[in-house]
Length: 612
Image (tube, rainbow, N blue to C red; front, top):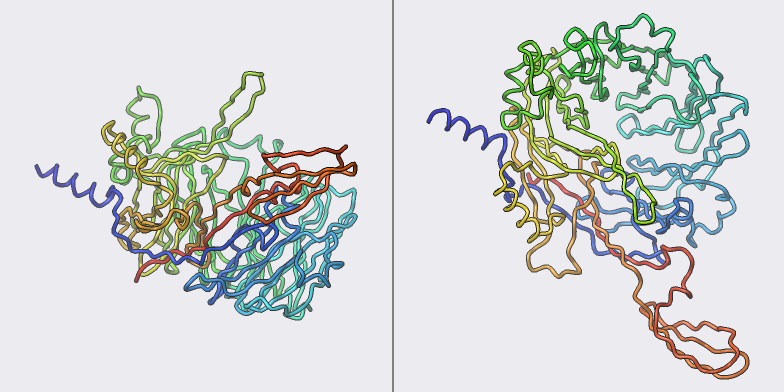
């Protein structure tokens, strides 16, 4: 009886079924109508400041180059999500006088600070990449017209071509840093150039520095990941691959790739780098987070003494770097234990290390202290300077091959996701808690990272795809019937983790009221995180109404066909030999060639916030 009570308690705390009690609210914008002839279609969210959330709109087209022939940025009030301003970037009357300056320019990115929005464009000229910029105020009124501010040159014979980067940070004195990696040849040090951009497009500071890596071979992009941190420093993550020659003395299962983290002070040009390569250990799924005055570095690791093949996951590496001294303060390797994993996967043994059914005692002991090798760290939450919560999942990419009756074969790419597993680590390397939420979903495509998280009042709100894995046949049938009766996409599914204890509960937010008209119903199909807030959109795209074609014309010159459709009445002249025609059918022949022009849509912007 006592055991049954304990199991009931555990299932209630850690595997609570979906609850309809809601502690989030979704604020939707007014309904918007989309078409290529008007403002275009929603593309993606750009970012936000304290008052507005901004989104990019463009044409609906198959190719990005055609879609971005017409672009607009739209601002939405951060509280109500109502439309608060807009500006046409290209393809609209308001910027027609600058059209010559936009020749061959390609939209690069927008960076949003509190009172200024910078929009960057690039232009590729022979062996040279130019960077152009224009700026707007927070309500999207033009401040400074577009201007060329920077260029990178490449030697046509170089193995590595130069490549741009542009970053900004509101918390770092509202600064913008531009620059890029310079061109070079094999075995040359990779050098970067940077400049701090002023509001008037002049430069406050500039410099060059060498990264602790060299050119390995032919390259057209950036060699490393860059972040302009809240601390005002430039943080760089580089991956080093040991050559086959140098790897001859390594252990059989030792990984030939390892990361180097560098911190650069743009004011002085000072750089300090740390290689995260350890004896008898492989590091997987590594990343970092700049938080206050420290840089937190983390990743799964394999202990080669436990698994000489170097594939198993034995624990988590957690280190902190001081952003003022650039020194590593501590490096800790937190090993998984049997008791921890038994508690974590009490209802699902398959999420621990899998091996052969028949196992030796020694093999079983090792498996009991290992995670499955397909675990990845997706996102990180840190509510204080010392601790970090890693949100992880199991990810398996695979393909299938299908062929039609004519022998045409296609490869389909899929990504299967299991679990939302959370680990909270302290600065001293101790594991404070671990929790596991079971789920299962398969996406089209590879490497789908679907865990999104925000925090509020010592709670972590986690959005994820897929429902809990249901064990019994009876439960599967009941859930399938429920899903068929209700449109799952009309619900926002999330979990709330307690930052102090790790306990969580699954929840579902009903997006639409029961009496809402079908044309006004919304769905949550994609969730993004901007400045610790969930943002989403609901968009429906439909083909234009089928026009009715009727007409009659007499005479030698030709006939006139009148099309009647929802866009109005238009006349088209056709050269005919004479006579009378009457036609009812599709008017596709008379429509523009761009497929986006054959469609229209409607949509809503939404913000999901915890109820306090």
